[in-house]
Amino acid sequence: MEGAPLKLHGMWASFYVHRVQLVLHLKGVEYEYVEEDLSNKSRALLLQNPVHKKVPVLLHGDRPIAESTIIIEYIDEFWREKPILPTDPYERAVVRFWCHFVDDTLRPSFGAILRSSAEGQGAAVDNFRQNLEFLEAELRDGFCKGRKFFGGERIGLLDIVMGCGLYWNSASEDVLGLKIIDQESFPFFTSWFESFNEAKEVKEVIPPTEKLVEYVKGLLQKMFN
Image 1 (cartoon, helix red, strand yellow):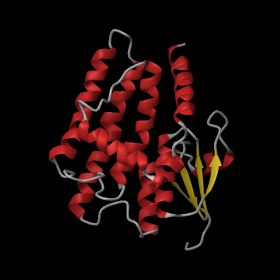
Image 2 (cartoon, helix red, strand yellow; image 1 turned 90 degrees about the vertical axis):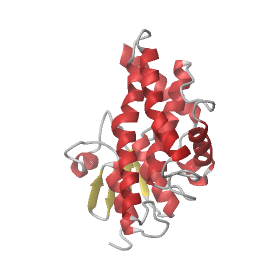
Image 3 (tube, one colour; image 1 turned 60 degrees about the vertical axis):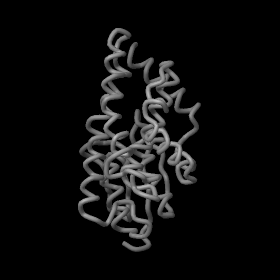
Image 4 (tube, one colour; image 1 turned 45 degrees about the horizontal axis):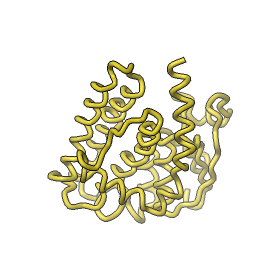
């Protein structure tokens, strides 16, 4: 497979796609990007991911790989320079635990804010902030104490999984007129995000805030109409 062409099927606003793009940029791996219209999915996408029919899908030669974290681990194992996952088995387990927490608990609790009525919004915000406090504590007192990134001095898997979705959070805060993640309540977390945001590769991948804000506005209008 060495030298085989690499093609990524994605959608510009998807933070799952941004995760894969960021790993490829961090490792300096060249790839072809194919933008998908999710209202009219290409035949290629449906063939390569017949189970979920979703982006991202990475095509390495004639081999399709689906699901963002699975794709990331594949890339990390195939291109071993600048590793994304730690080499220590225990640290890998810790990272995977927190990645699952982000996707299975933290992200849905933010989605609940977007779906909540005016009366229920306060409780949804409190629940999200309680979940975020676990990551604040991890940076302050836990395994990641004293680190620039969750991955150490370099961006790692948990940084990617957590960081790429935060731009949606920021855009949603703008649309809703809420400040959910503030520096006073989450000093370690906001400091980490500033470092993440300054990375050249992150700036190459994440769309402009204004564009994401308009996209989130459109999604919320559809949700409540």
